[in-house]
Amino acid sequence: MARLALAAMAAALLLGVASAQGVGSIITQDVYNAMLPNRDNSICPANGFYTYDAFIQAASAFPGFGTGGSDEANKRELAAFFGQTSHETNGGAAGQYTWGYCYKEEINKGTSPPYYGRGPIQLTGQANYQQAGDAIGEDLVGNPDLVSTNAVISFKTAIWFWMTAQPPKPSCHDVILGNWAPSDADAAAGRVPGYGAITNIINGGFECGVGPNDANVNRIGYYQRYCDMFGVGYGDNLDCYSQQHF
Image (cartoon, rainbow, N blue to C red; front, side, top):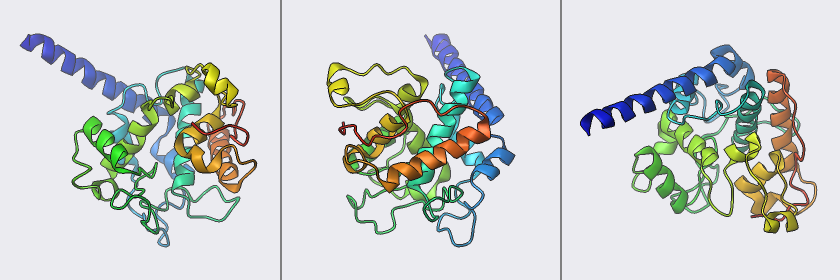
């Protein structure tokens, strides 16, 4: 039994290394710097926090993240992840898609304190802190500030959210890889595969089913910029203007 456990652990570690190498082969340090040129700007509250090494270390804990499909699909997934998280941490004016990762926590700290938005995905609410902490082995309910003080943990919470389905919501990962098949209820609600469905997963209660809005435009602008950098297409259904929220 001990040998089997060691073998399983070794396999998991190898998968993690492969994941990190795969993500790192697409997003090198230079590419990361080009994607997020203002993350360390002195006017950004998160300057110095979101390091490349922290991202790569966190990615290694999630086999399949940015490595679960074809080269094109993997690049599109990473473009989508950074498109959504750049919007969540945006520090620039409308139409400027170079100010992602400027913030590491919610500005007014008014949403579900002390479990207000933190990190790249702006993890919010005690339930999410509990589930994310359980998944990554950290007490985030007892110490939620870990998400805004430890960059590896911060990235891990974002990738955990990205990779994890929370029914009836699919995972962002499955949506962007084309692995999600909408149910009859989804179809009736106008929810279709594409980047817009990911916006619906993350913040559909505020941004979806309300017609054109600036938040959708910003999320899409970041995503398209990163897709262009990686040389991949955007796919269909980029907004959630006419989708009912989950």
